Image 1 (cartoon, rainbow, N blue to C red):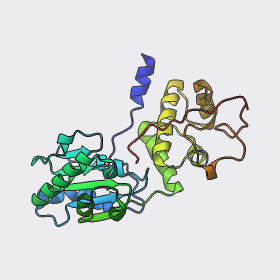
Image 2 (spheres, rainbow, N blue to C red; image 1 turned 180 degrees about the vertical axis):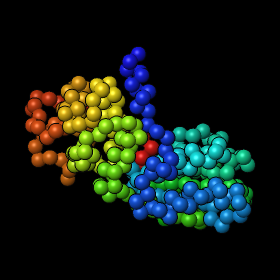
Image 3 (spheres, rainbow, N blue to C red; image 1 turned 30 degrees about the vertical axis):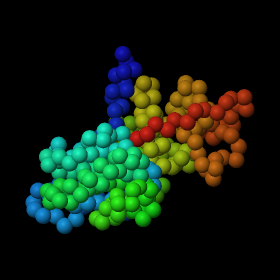
Image 4 (cartoon, helix red, strand yellow; image 1 turned 120 degrees about the vertical axis):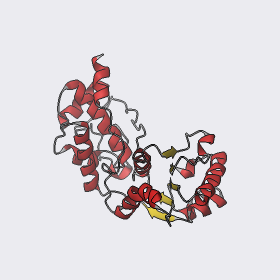
Length: 270
């Protein structure tokens, strides 16, 4: 019972524009925040958007923020959505379509038809995301052309100092007492993409609540020891790997200990 309680306390906050770090993406954030109000006020010239960026750049966060703040008039769509969810509904003003490059063939046809319906109805808008620019996107040619018709934005990735700020902000939202040196340490010992970092922060959040301790490097050691892991929770790239095997705190590993399974649960930061 106590464990269930602490997990509930550690529930991440919803994705909003307020907890998205804009960095070099201020124009895009401004347009998306104002989109629903602009649609309600009258004709809008730019009603279709395509946003592309690398994994961890925040594409899903932005789409979830868009639908979260649409007062019930937004619809979030992804490769996991049912095919009939791609149908046009005049009661929906904002369609947010994530990971276009991963849609099935049938979903791509449905999105093509939805795009045309949105273009024909001046009170609706569509924002789609993918992993590449329209010219390089691996989807149907007719859909790829449609996605390039509207405004296209490249979502600029965060620098490491901005990622550290994101971790500190996310910790404050969760009520986590985060030691000052922890964000920088995570960025130098783990993969620096935001999904991996946020998954790690969520695990540290749960463990710190259970232990009733602040998140510090000694707490990381305790979490690894309790879980039976001695290597980072997410794999580091070759250039980031230390010269000699070490545990999370940089101490030499026991040569008889085996590698840990990666912990790469998906988050909204992608």
